[in-house]
Image (cartoon, rainbow, N blue to C red):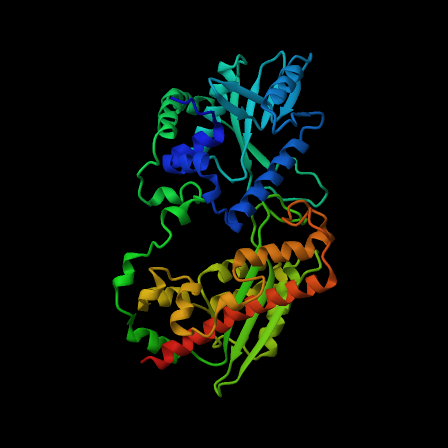
Length: 463
């Protein structure tokens, strides 16, 4: 039987789903990596870079494609006298290869630190650290401590390039000991699976936990929810709710960005920072006005977002306590509350908006379903059943929230000069391309609020 080589990544993949592991080894061309996954990878790379920057003088083992060379570089670095920090050192044992994030080595002992972009230690991080430690210790290097360094969500960036305090280190040495005992069994099982036919594993929760599987489109190309057998349903309460809304009615949507490694002073990791809003205001006579705001200067956009929204609602006569503000979900409420906390002088006006929010997602979940939604109540699943002429697929460049973030990062990249941007290595945008991305962002956000208008009209007219 062929002895398939394994790595930490392959073992972690196998623990999620052995079918995914088999496909990754034998049919990698079938993988479909989503834009969201690529964004997560880019964010993870940035987190790793910052972690290394906190240890000046550390040695990066750069031979990523040549294991033999990488192992030789690692041995040479470890043989140097005194304390040292190695980045990406390479080890193997029994045909299992690992590259560690941070290895602190010296006469006083050796400490392994795995760096994670999450804000807490998760169960699969223990598997990750256990595999690393198992290979490293069996290759001949004793470890006195093993830790996971994760993002501290309470860290506040001061804007000075100093990320000291961004990470919180958690010792996991004791917690991984039971896990390490299972690793030889995992290795044997995975090698046997790889030597056999494609495992017969049905689509299930493992397809999304702890990661979205890139082979899901291959395993379930036409999977539909059982709810497809349902008949369309609309409760009369939706009709009553729509008719009870006062005028003027405001329909609000934000677009926001969150950085694992903050780039603006006074912000925290993964804090949702709005850079855009769209606002449709509907009046009793049927008139429908639209306002919008988008900041692509590269400067912190939060105050400009807050001030412009408060002013727009006031100008439209929709700032009074009887003027409802309709959203889809609780996201806008959390953004408004965050802005109110950040800018106390604007707090009363922002919290007044939050107090008048009407969550159309909650209403739709309670009172409406349609077979074409396939069991999803996302706006993009609901909209084709109530307003098929509003087609997100017809939009250019930006058709979902992830694409909106990507477009925003491209537009501000030259201004903030930060590697967080997925476009950091891309050629500088032409003015025409900048204009196209800006137009696409505005069109996408405007469609979101127009969709809310059409949803309320659908409820009102379906009684």
